[in-house]
Amino acid sequence: MAVKKKKRASRRVGFLLESTTRVVKLSFTRAFKNLGVDITPEQWVIVDTLYQQGNLTQKEIAKAAYKNDPTISRIIDKLEKKNFVLRTSDSDDRRKTTVKLTKFGKKTAEKCYPEVHKLRELSWKGLSAKDYNSLQRILERVFENSETYL
Image (cartoon, rainbow, N blue to C red; front, side, top):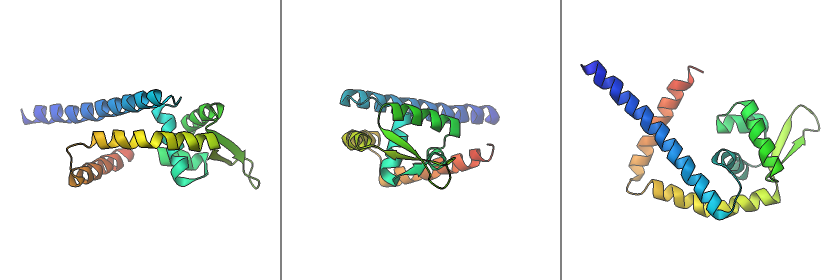
């Protein structure tokens, strides 16, 4: 009987992780739409990464965003069409592509940050810094443990 309870509990955690991710993405989607910004949460991750870290190669972005190269390339293609980012070839190695935010991309990020911060505060309402740190530590452990299967 104890085994069945463990299985149900682990499905519940998985369900909570998936449901939480979905709700957070929907919240970001709505917030960006309300701001009049044509960007998805997946695209925002790239814009935010470039804003925080500066120009990066596609491989560096893929690593920072935990996405594979084809997915990053597709997202960057869309961001480039929307004039958020610009790709440039490395002068020493033309196979290496650097991605940077355009002026429009930077202005858009700055427009979004207040709403992003508000969403984060709302998400953590009623939780202490200790709660946040515990959750982050636990999720990082689950991530690292799961990553070994990739």
